[in-house]
Image (tube, rainbow, N blue to C red; front, top):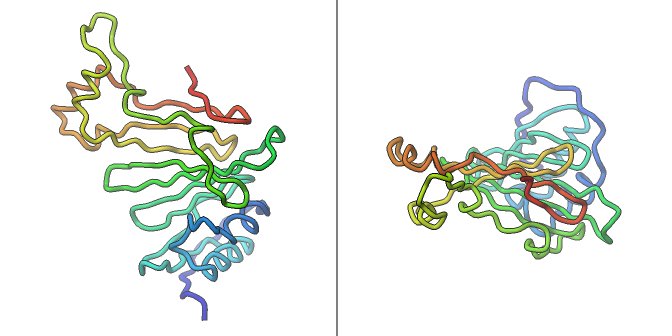
Length: 212
């Protein structure tokens, strides 16, 4: 018998599913990105989605997982109460294989994320070929009248919590620093004049580039 399913009492109108998302990637998942869901659970969550039902599915930790959104080349799922996964498949003819972008976010409770890249056979790719590493220094802007340097601000930040959000429409990424949720009000007030909240990274068809 498959995992016990709690069917959400409401349904919504859903578009047609993208076969690359459901059949090729979410169903096979040889990289174990969705390892908390058994193959049966992944199959069920897709079949109920096709039937226009949003469901909560038991996962291997004893909690529940739930699809958040499915678009043409995008999927978002709440894996646990404190974690989410977003997946986007590049829509490009410039490369021999699709690039699959996976964004994992932990709420600890401050959001902290990581990005991984795969081909459509779930072979992990070198992320540096597709995106420059995002560090807390990318969120620092030194006012012209300040004598401080970027490293002076970086040295004051012991845990740089950074999360990511993938656009379902085009795969663009918003990177956000979450220091305000971590630091005391007093400490954050000292850093705030030197910080920007977010950075946009645009998919060019081959890699991500920061928007100025």
